[in-house]
Length: 235
Image 1: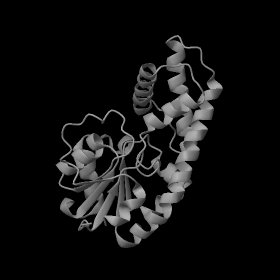
Image 2: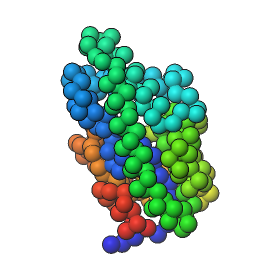
Image 3: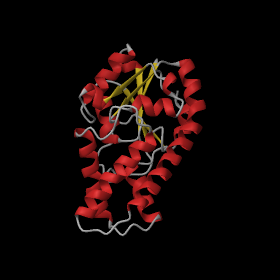
Image 4: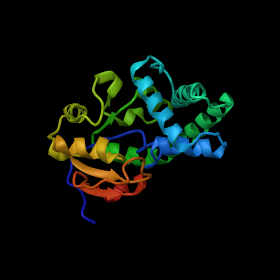
């Protein structure tokens, strides 16, 4: 397998390092199914999108929140939206889904941690993520914050993926030419396309699709892989 010739790596976070390619929409929906929450998929998708918008514009997430607290807040907003839409829901199920999601993320990151340690010895690593202003607290809770030279977080820098400007900030934080940086992420539209637009090399972690299963053009992804643990085969 031909390897990338690079001097630094930029990682996405959510769906990449914490679920190994599983989109959080799909992960949370699986929780709805597990606990038999009486909601159809279309309504869930509406609630999911609504909660994401609210969390982006309202101070729902505090800077010191760990990921369990993020998921509890996210599920609370979703359930409140669905209850207002006429669904009869048990709020206790929201906390159960949140706890399952936190456990999944914690376990996945624990498995990814040795790989990050190896890579951090070889390359400077930067994180570029759409998040809520508490990503450093989340990374610290999971024990991986120290591996990153910088964390470029949408709520902090004021620009969100898929705007290529957020990846330009990641390149700036890295301090290397974009062409010498590899971007690893699970979303084609939010990671691969904007990263390629600023001149980075791109590796697409193509896992659970969530709204990206009908892409006509995937040319912005230089290569694809299906599990984060195969990353060592590319660098």
